Image (cartoon, rainbow, N blue to C red; front, side):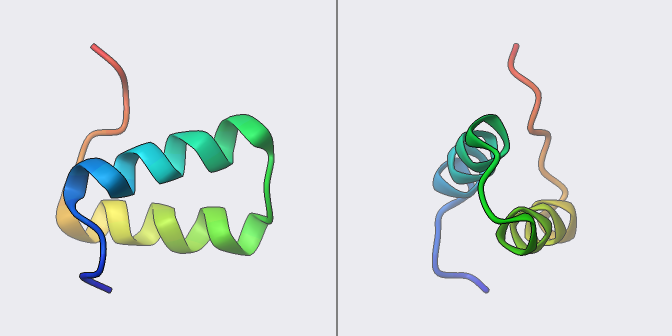
Length: 43
């Protein structure tokens, strides 16, 4: 899935995690974050 930019992907993951949205969506986003080697922690 290369639809979102890296920044959009991280933001969507953080938002979904904070709101406690659908676990399947969170897992899919997390897998994509890991595939791209991104860091989702805030500085």
